[in-house]
Length: 307
Ligand code: ARG
Image (cartoon, rainbow, N blue to C red; front, side, top):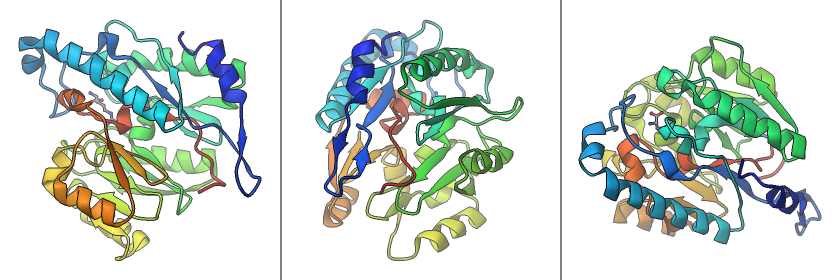
């Protein structure tokens, strides 16, 4: 495992914020795309034939783009823990799907499709090692038979102090109830109604100042209303299809920075006007598997008591 001891010791380092409140060092989990490819199709974005035609160039692009992304996160102050890549598990790079993590408590995923189920044991070993090192506090599993694809379908909103949880294509609605019981936090279940926007993290992105970007077409009407009512007219940012197709919602917001691979000029301007700055990372090759920046990482440092 590359989650080596020097990372664990770095991770013990804590800094003290102005209000003398202790915060964990920003930490995330990622997986180098050594064995990344697109050889099966479990979402409409996946194009195995296109990959096959150009696999050499695309693999190289994946490697260099991913390294740049990793550097961008390190520059923002993140410690990056690495899961060891595994041959035959190309989607292991999408570490957001490994688990839901809050307050150091890890709830491991169960994947809908057999193509990804082999990742479960791999992530379990990885997190159990982190538990032994004291990097996380608890590692738990969902009840058998309940599908839930981690932070891909369960997004912590640090402003409202709740989870937005998607269900439908990949995660079962019953899992949203389990998440509420497990973490003891409010969970807003949202029904995803298309196959393109198969995970919540390609459909919605809550931001640090309370804004929530989302693509209305991804959700059932009732869920669109739930988002609009919860967030309020001042703070909802409905995106158009063009930005949704660029995976602008699959972005990682950290303070006033938004790490993403692409969006329209209009959206960038709007976000700048609201006081956010976009940090571009060249990971668009992962769109060929249906993913981008958010799903290539999993944050371990989210806490329920801090904004
Ligand atoms: N090919 C992967 C799948 O279909 C992509 C997952 C991307 N992850 C995400 N959280 N959106 O499962």
